[in-house]
Image (cartoon, rainbow, N blue to C red; front, side, top):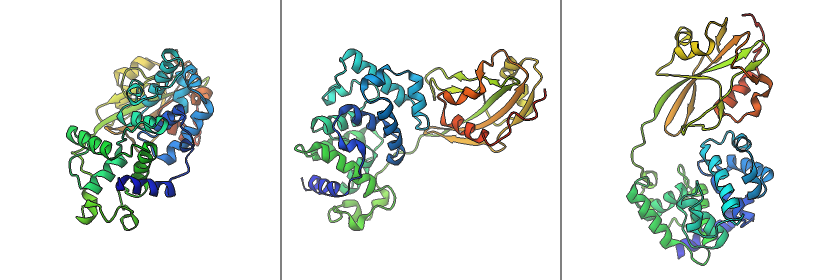
Length: 355
């Protein structure tokens, strides 16, 4: 109990002033928790405020168009979170009559909600003593108790969840859970934790054994896959282009992109124009082709690095080009393509148009 009391005492004195800490409305807590998955607070805050403004209730979110949601989410990555938000909002409205689930087990039925998110909402909104376990919590527990079990293995996940559940303050689960997460984020940081002023430093096993840098333990990282993307940025004489919706279950599902040729390695212009997909798109059209970025743009995702070249392809006309160039920024796109849009604004893209 001392562990919990010390954390809550520290938290009440040091917690950040964040909008989702001023409410117990489960809709707002759910929004914040989904946004903050894989996202830092300083980045997620702006998105949270945008979502609350545009979709103040779960009914507003449920009735929104998916493209509107994806556009608002643009830049956060892990877009399945946005799609799952939309799916769950429609489930709450249509199947639950707009009433948000009120306990851990019911919350798990929402798409995109796992153990951590269900525990956070259940404890913060409904005082259910269900312990949260995220990266911050793993770190605090591993160091304080000196646990070397890998946190990303089945055994470690079960061990840390059991321990977290044993430690939770059943009388104040909301503050306990928020305290241990905040403590991990601001005091027991991954690098350079503030051990000298830590309220738990007299009983921290890792500190006593000088193993702070060793804990928590993770099994070896998953091998990162390298991919090579060649985007064909078509510009016609009447300023039209092609944007395709990305289908399937891979990355960036339902986001828009330029025609894409994926290759096994970096290719040059000669390889590009001789590629079957390139010839299917442009056939015998007269073209001007220019490589936009001379240096590869490397977009890093958790399990893959995407090495990208944008090719500007000018032609008088193309039957597949039905998107007005002036309208492209209204489409939800991956941040990789959004950044390309920003770079493109600084160039004379429509100059020297002769084909």
